[in-house]
Image (tube, rainbow, N blue to C red; front, side):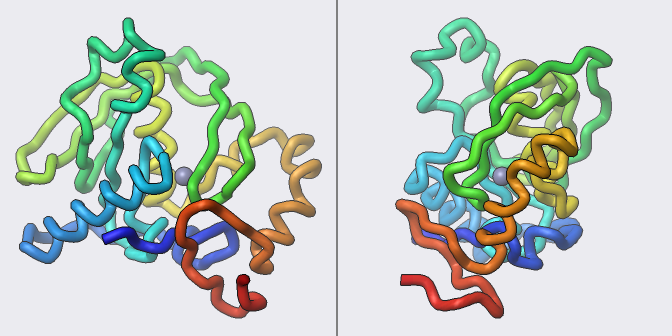
Length: 194
Ligand code: ZN
C-alpha cells in the first residue's frame, strides 16, 4: 500500500523519533508499505516520520542508480535495505558536497556538505545486528535518513545565505503550497490541497 508523504511544515518531520521496540507482523507490513511508497515516488530513501510515523526506521533502495554508479554499486549490500534503530558509529573527517533532495520537500535540490563515509550499526528487517561502512551515495542517503529520525531536514544544513534565498519558498510550502506526482498527506492547519 502506498502511504501519503508528509511535507515540509508538518510537525512529525520535526519530532525526534522513538526507538523500535519489537518486531511484529504489523511492523513487517509497514516496512513493505514504506518500500512500495519509496519506489512509487521514485525515491532512493524514505524514513518512517515522512509517512507520519515517529519511529527509528528507514528504507533505502539504490538499485535504480546501479547502472549509472557501476563502480560504487559493486560495494552496496543487497538492495533494498531496511535500517532499524540505526546509529552512526564513526565518520570520516573528510566532507564532500553532494546535491540532495527530499520527498518531503518536492522540487528542491541543494548541495549539502557531509562526511564522505560513515560506519552505521543497525538492525535489518529480521532484527539481525548489522554494521556497514558506507561511502559515496550510500553514506549520503544514510546520513540524510538518520537526520529525519532526529527531526532534521537537509535544508537545515545549508549555508545561511542559501537558506535565506529559499526562505520564501519554504514558508509557502509550510502553508500547504506544495505539489508532487505522488500522494501527499494533508498538512495540518494549512489550506486544502487540490
Ligand atoms: Zn528526506
